[in-house]
Length: 170
Length: 180
Image 1 (cartoon, each protein chain N blue to C red):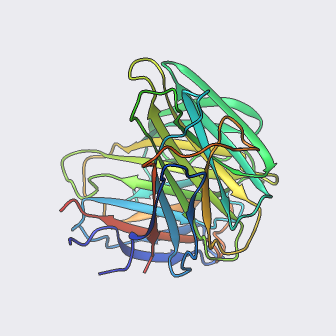
Image 2 (image 1 turned 120 degrees about the horizontal axis):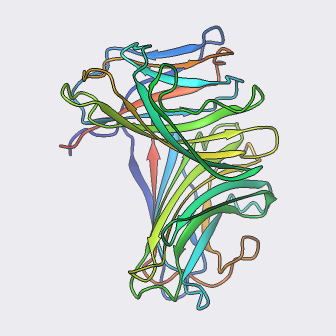
Image 3 (image 1 turned 120 degrees about the vertical axis):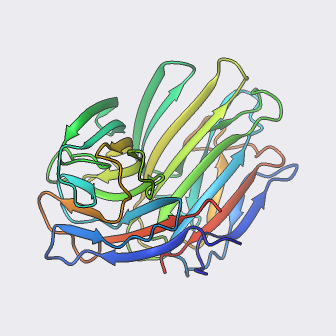
């Protein structure tokens, strides 16, 4: 049986940093799955960057619903420098608590990189937002060797858990 | 090889099965993943949905969901402190014969002492032409106990009083995901 859905690395927040980083990602898998859970710090806007690229090279389409309103969608055309796979949260009291991101063909050097994310954010009462996000890293095609998950406000607490899995097609 | 994405158990509906049950779930994984192929016997529904309970608990489930169906229709909803965890759409008795809806439910940190939650993604085609649905749902179970059992119920159109049975050969697979 081929080795697939292998845990490549697991880390937690430090309580003193707004960023969690996976480096030296092996290029021997087909796709990646990034699971973020127990994110209980108020982190406001959360983003993911590939290969430490902070340029305006990310775009996304989002569909979501929450306790207070009907279904909504929005789009950020390529040019957004901050957000990749996760939503900018509505307020500082919101929390991204759980996200699963699928990153396809991450080691390909000839195509841009698409991702798909399912997330849940909560406020104080219940699951305020359910969300799915399609996003793409539009930079000059390159293999993804590094992933940064970052918060634009508070540090990731030590309870925040991040795991990167490798998916192999053969 | 890492001991991850391992099949823990399978539950398959027989001729009269009101719930698909997983018990004695080991606490040795990081997350759980449920895959469901299901259909209900509710004779009033072309598209039904299904619900769950953790540890047989009847309290503390809150949800938000978003659905697209039958072309360009989009809807959403929410509920708090309910008695069942909402999952989403699945085929009812009036849907095309022998068609089953699909669902995937991801449950992170199921064995830890944090509040429990899950993503549920469901889809199905119900008459082969114009009636179909996909939905995403997120649920929080306001409970910090480790999840040791899961039961899946056909809703029969009710989020609070599910009834009826799973159609025969409806199947649920429970996988364990381990991060080391």
